[in-house]
Structure formats: structure tokens, C-alpha cells
Length: 197
Image (cartoon, rainbow, N blue to C red):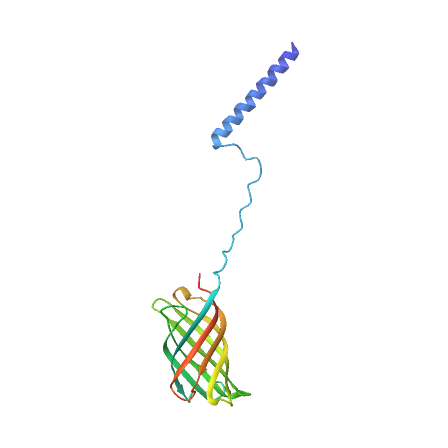
């Protein structure tokens, strides 16, 4: 008789426990949590925009002056200025035109080369790209003293529109067949560029 009573109590306790569990699920809308909540995913910074190749060239008239450029600092006190504007950019950045100034430091002669530095802007209807230029302009005495070639580097200094925070670097060259006259010059930028986000 005692064994039957114990068994009846055990069955009643099991049924009560099941009833309580179903009531709890109904109240919470699901099963009760069985462990600690999952850890929150860390904030992941999206990767920066990729760099793409930049290969552009242009040719056109420039104006040479025996004084310094108005927008580029002359450090040696004896500078010449090459100014250019509206040169049609080819090979990339369709629809842009290049303008800028390059200073030639007459007091900084290394061999047959002078230090050169300047700025340029490639501008289109909806954006612009700013370049900083640094290099050496050299002449070959066996050719002509006034035939100079500028070889150096560029860095991209932002701009506007989708290039508002652009970056990049590469090589820059400028062939000047007649340094002392307004004549056609050719320029080449070759490297990489990264748009803003």
C-alpha cells in the first residue's frame, strides 16, 4: 500500500512539473533560456576603397616666366615659373582639364638638374583632383641647354565630389623642348588613385 502511495505522489509531481513548464513557455512565448546570451558581434570597419591605376597624359601650350609662381613658394629666391591651364586630359579621367604651376629653383643646382615643385588640378564638371608635384628638371648639354625634362613624383591631395578625400601617388614627367618660350609641352602622370568612400 505504501509503495502505491509513493508511486502516485511521484506521478503527480511529474505532472505538476510539466504543467508549470508549459505555463512558463506560454507566458514567455518560447522556451526558457538554457544558458548565457550569445556574445554581441564586434563592430567591423568596412575596408577602404581600392586603389586603381591612374595613367593620364596631356599636351598643350604653357607660359614661362622669369619670376616665381603666384601660388607656389619659391624657396631659393631665384625661381622661374611654368604655368599652364586648360590642358585636355587624355588616357583617363575623361572630360577633365589640367591647370597648374611648377617652380624651378635656380639656386638649387645638382649637376645638370634643378629642383622643381608645384601643384596641378584636374577639373571636370562634377569633380576635381589636386596634385602635388616634386622632382628635378634636367638638361643635356649635348642637346640644348633650354631643352629640359622634368622627372619626379606626384601625390594626390584630395579634391572635390567623389574625389573629395582622394589619395594616391606615382610618377610625373614633363618634357619641355624650349624652356624659354611659350610652346607645347607634354606631361604624363602614371600611378594609382583612390576615390573617397
